Image (cartoon, rainbow, N blue to C red; front, side, top):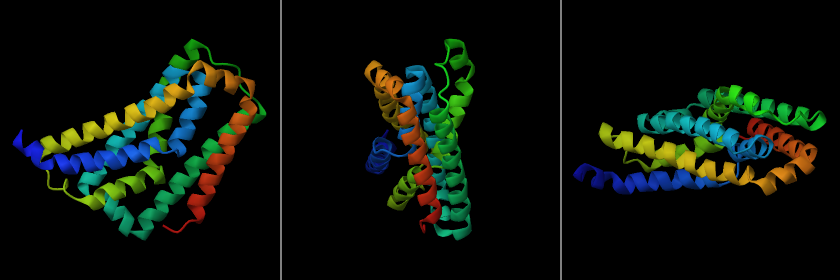
Length: 211
């Protein structure tokens, strides 16, 4: 147990920075807004599971130093920008399509069938989400965990997963609450249109911002 106490300040600092990123609005929160209001709490939590699984990849990359490597290699960051912008553009297209032609409310069977798709969408957004990656680069800059033993790293990754799942889960449950769902149903064309505009703007800013 003594080794955990030695690394506790670094763990708390890393989780604290991650929590700030989780709770601040961004592409992941916007995705949960659309999923939670349209499909309810179960769909939102499935999406959160995918997002949190993406956090496992990002936290391991931080420990292994890959986030720092990406930050220093222009070519790698360019590929990351293109992937992130492309995925955000795809989300914008889907939101605009639902705004023009709103789909019927999903049945329980269709929601169950789409569980893997919901989790996959959250995972893909997280691992290509520049906002999340920049927060993890900030965590990597703190140091202190790169030389940690594997038990500490395991605790760090597990904590990052829980941090992400619980934090995003709170967003998802708020958006899936009955008042938010009623508000969405009364003006879902506007909600989907606003989400499409957000994702499109985020894609544009990512493509045109120097990293």
